[in-house]
Length: 408
Image (cartoon, rainbow, N blue to C red; front, side):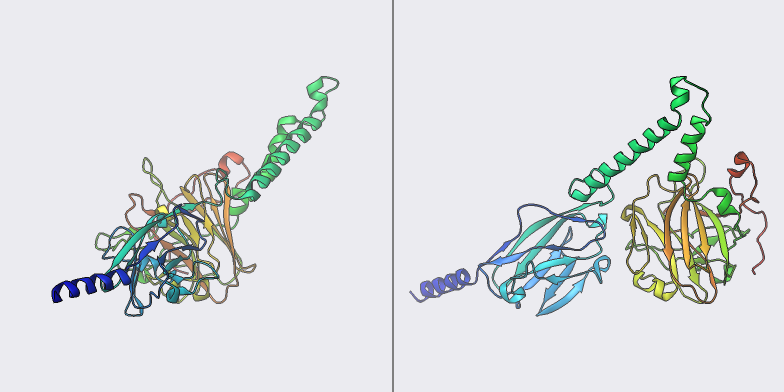
């Protein structure tokens, strides 16, 4: 009889402390680069302060975030400094109310997919899955933002107006009433050039300078060519695969304290795909690279554009800029305007302006290169020809030097 009473008592205790983990039935949708809360709570409501709360993706033993013994014990490296437990709404009482929701910041496309919410007590546990969908705010096919529809409507109207203006300019030639005073094809080319192109190659290359790599300051695991123009990850470098290798940097031998300076970098070899991993920009002389993204900021003397494979393109500005570059650049042009405090990036092959970073430079700055890891193609610094008047000659590709230039 006593054993039956004890068994019933244990059963009553287990029933009394049982709970269920609850999450939304629909996927949570958020834009890349933004923040999001993945809701998860315990039902019936009870304090979760003494429970183990584990958020994980595919591996239970490698949690995104682990809360235990009334504090956060562990956060996965790639989610460090951008994840925490949060309130699912303004009315939530937090852990005291059983709210164990997860907040994610600076979202990347790599964050998309299932997140497991696991809660465990002494005698009971439960888990559910929250599905996270990441959208690209620059993708015109994404209908979630009503402002996009307005933007593209206005864009279409502007293009129709442009076509109407061109037809008006060429109306005499089109109707055959009298010889046209203007060349229609020339008018079209001029207008499109004014709308599309930011700066011609001729204008950029007027500021071309010779750039080479300072071997003494290069990361020891980089392989640098004899002419100091080609750099790639060395065979001895052991990349853990956790994030971009920001420490794998090479520094230019040239120092700039004023004026405009332009150089180009080749990101693809013949018959090979363009590089997926690279970092290109400038750095204040004397600054040291670090493997942590939080240490290579503009305030620390770094200004760059980074291609991080499937994570896309981003700047390291205080308000990080996420870019959607299509096609992937095969040759990147860099214009440093020291006096005006601007660093601009151009797709040389497509003749397009990608990004301008505004800052205030002080002291000497030097070019910055990082070839990333795992790409078949190296990173090659090119030397531009002198500016010429002929449009055909101005499209001549920059070439490599046969000797290693002296440091300045």
